[in-house]
Image (cartoon, rainbow, N blue to C red; front, side):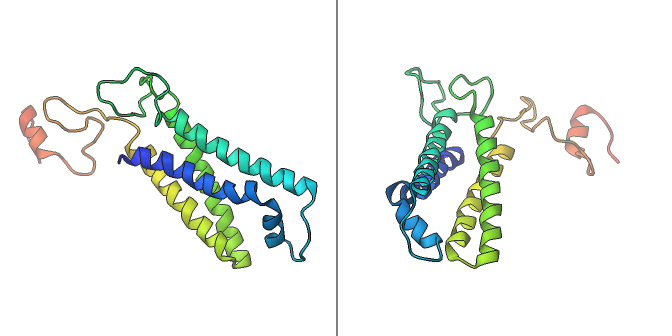
Length: 179
């Protein structure tokens, strides 16, 4: 499975996992978070379910906008999804990937701060889950967001430089003398 697909589907799964208890039983969430046992107010139930539905919506948009699910019946020759801006299958892939990665980074930072303050293990698990997805998202942004500029002659990436070391083999092929 491609790392890009893994990130897209994992983000959706992680958000759906967090949304399920918020939608299904907001009273249980309020009881767990409140120091005294009491019924949840109508406003607390409303905000809990709204947050749950929002998390599910973000997850579905993540899958749709990254091109993980084709929205047209026309398939490309390669059959895969790229994050290239000219790819008509996923024109919003890189911006969506960037926004959800920042979301996971902010969420991991927040849950880590809450974990260090309260010591509640569920905040620690939230830090691990969102931190891992943030790391995978950063990897996808850095390494899976373009095909690179590969030279047809040498097969090397044209965006690399010789600093701080010289490429003696390339200099020999060009007719330049190395140091």
